[in-house]
Image 1: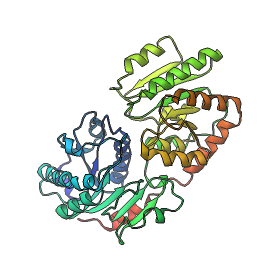
Image 2 (image 1 turned 120 degrees about the horizontal axis):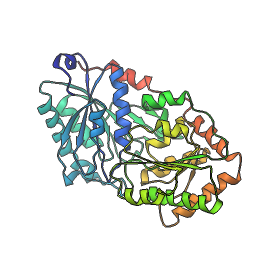
Image 3 (image 1 turned 60 degrees about the vertical axis):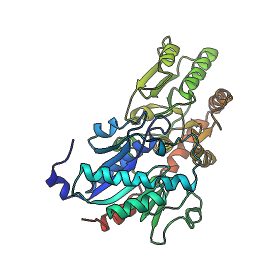
Image 4 (image 1 turned 135 degrees about the vertical axis):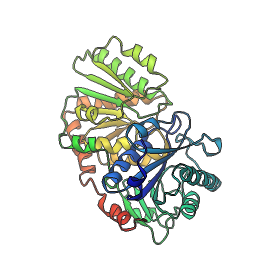
Length: 384
């Protein structure tokens, strides 16, 4: 639903450039939806700018009541999080995306000035940001945990755990850029904020497992995880473990998955959920990937068996495993099932394991939220 002109003119506009799709997943959009809701509550008017690429879940943006400017699908700007090695030429090529983004916004909202642009996109770095800022006169807030290329940003939010963030970002940011580091720097949805108040430390035995790998499942990990859980239940004759399976509506293996669990009354399949907080809150253990769900699970003290779905998820998972909050399977290869089985066996044979992991997960997000500092920068630079 589009805001009335009088409503829009009194609020500084924040453009949010983010994408989702079969080869990208939905984590960036979910993260930005929470960010947009947070900004709206704090006096900004968010507008999303997204490409209409295969698997894009832009419908959830509109369902959440936010405005959206759509860019056409274009192979020149296609990328996959599963092969995330980019060259300087790839980043430079995104200047054309910046031109298209600015033009699309101007056509849809003539006369509306953009105060800030938020970039949460693996291909958007200095070339894109510099061109978009020059063309619109806006300031730039970048969300990035990779530190793999320079940013043209006024504010950078790094949602990863870093031992030395200043060293990590040395030489990659303008001298005037202020940056904030850690998973507590990003807002999560109000549903998770509410759920956190009811979350408690888990203790064994495991009675309920949540299987969720987000908005993409190229390597059939959902089916393989559920198959492992069902086989284990058969072998151990366990009658207490309940399994919640949260999947996107376009999951390729959905039919096979439903056939697999049809005889198991304790398996429930949840299709197309936008809010996972209640499932995470009621679970004792999760099996899933990295991305934003790492921090959502930690916020609710939910222990997890995790596998990196992309290269950029490897270090965050390693750091969480070092803190005792998760067990990492390592990689989604042919020994993935045995890795999940080994982790499940470890938890079942060690009565204190679940409690230890849950406590460590809570500790990771014990200072959440830490959003006031960068929000105050944005408020102090409202470009009205």
